[in-house]
Image (cartoon, rainbow, N blue to C red; front, side):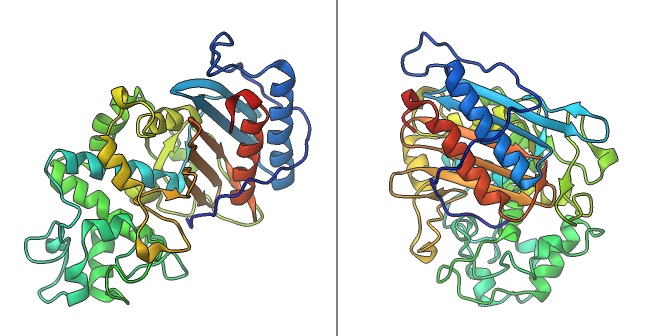
Length: 380
């Protein structure tokens, strides 16, 4: 589930979608107007072109401006075989869009005094020392919570050796123990950046130890609950395991969307959500509404500050950040293309698709910028 670079290119128009659902918003609100009919048609065209070009059965999008949902739409089919139209309420796997949620949970625990960024994870007395053998390497013992948040732990990159896609039959506990025993860090912590799903899997376990709650329970109650989000949950692995209201997944051309242990990916890529749910979450950490923020301004600043070792990637803690500053995160799995974005102009948006094909990750980013720019009053 690699990250992607922020781009703002324009693409052309396409056809009208199979399914259109009225957006939320108040046209009388000068700061957050609803799209006009002509603007909405342009937005539909961009979305439908994306679906057609990348063979995406179903797509759901949501946009907020200054803390208010101003647009949400669904296009195409949630389930091709059943002919079920997609709606804004459908749940999709979000893949690595999970990471901003896990990072937020860590920063909430930091504010509560239960975790520190410089806490050692595997040193004696460290959060996850019990997963290690008797003599963990010096580099392993040097890894801190901050290293895991910023993908600078020195090991376990998202490449062909990514441990999170190894042997889906084994449990999370067994996988972690095996990796720590057999795949020590290749570099000194803090010296190199390498996107690490396994690192965020470990953060989920830190959350469990620090909160004395299962990871999913803590995020559901302490992160999502205050945002008014009640439908998000950890995904199942098979088509038969789908939750009520969850889409079916399709990969182009030959992926296996039901060949992974997605539930084991919980804290790095395991959630399902609607686009609207994701926007509600981002609105509570975007730094634009302190009264309803999950985090203090200081925590948000720290969470969105990049580190020296991530030069070129612009990665902070669970977010990519540029100089504007805009924040975002991509998500990609067989059967899933996803993105969330927070702009400096006060917009937040999310887009979720139930298929993945070559180039669909970058294209969904361009599509959403085009949708937002179709309403000049939003000042995307």
